[in-house]
Image 1 (cartoon, rainbow, N blue to C red):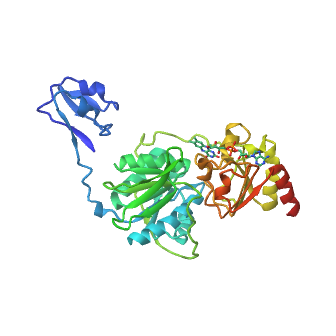
Image 2: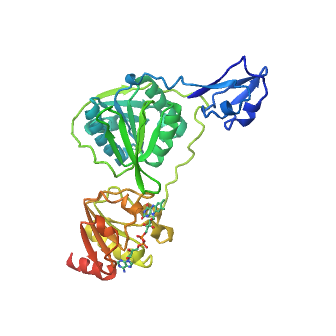
Length: 390
Ligand SMILES: Cc1cc2nc3c(=O)[nH]c(=O)nc-3n(C[C@H](O)[C@H](O)[C@H](O)COP(=O)(O)OP(=O)(O)OC[C@H]3O[C@@H](n4cnc5c(N)ncnc54)[C@H](O)[C@@H]3O)c2cc1C
């Protein structure tokens, strides 16, 4: 949606210049002129006393049938694919099979040969390669420009990105540039059997209900997907596909940020998404030292510890350990919930674990409703007993 000035009606009053929240309107020869910063919000249309600005539907009437294929943004860091890319490829395969199309990955970097083969092995039929030294590390302007140009040229129907820090930055920029919608943080994707559009489900209202969102009139349909939610694609060694090199060039000043230094955060950060065993603690631990006991069990199993948000908010443990709607979504083989009540926002991040074992003093705690095994008791008695058995 955009707006246009009806020159014959414009009286040069400048009300639109003052009311535009994006400073996108100037006066030239006493006539309003809409600039590139216009988002089509329509404030000027409502404010103009002479009805001299109107909304246009130019972009809405895209020919949607031109858009084909499911794309996955192949996020790489330091030459390694992020694990969520493999999950997205698994999901893209399922969606593509239902609408009878193929799966492509779009890969930006400065050396992408080995990653291209990995993407083929994980199911990509095509890999669009954007290769340039400026793309070695992620920067919003550079990645947005090359991927937007690729979208305009090749017209994918669906684009999936990981809901990582990078995906959450890039996805909205692409959606705005392509004049389409984006559903962030999806936990479920499915194809509508009737119209073949994608139905994107995500938690809403603090996790109290799940909203299913569609993008009926614009293309591509875009989603970011939480890491750890979807099943990983199968690796088929030697599987091949088609590599397509994108034209990449940048004008000076086109990339507004420079990377001066990459500083990695020191200290212990959790890697929850890949863990097969997670021993999570909640306020039932009583104090931060309680995590030491959980660590013993996690180490014995070769897993990691996790936490509820309440412990993070209390300063007991780093946020990187938080499981749940505003933390990490996990899918381990076994998830221990120790002294965790089972609030819906916590369940949103762990209920697709293969097995859930809950330990709680309160037999009515909601966590027992999702647990495969429930142990009613004091975790300070139960966990030492489990350790002894192990
Ligand atoms: C928008 C929003 C987003 C949120 N996001 C998240 C999120 O991502 N992750 C998350 O976890 N929460 C999240 N929350 C918070 C969530 O609603 C709960 O407040 C939180 O999960 C509660 O943490 P808890 O279970 O550790 O604590 P509590 O609810 O206080 O539960 C403690 C439990 O420990 C049990 N207990 C006590 N002593 C013992 C003992 N010795 N042995 C065994 N059991 C014992 C008690 O019976 C109780 O069930 C969010 C909330 C909002 C509003």
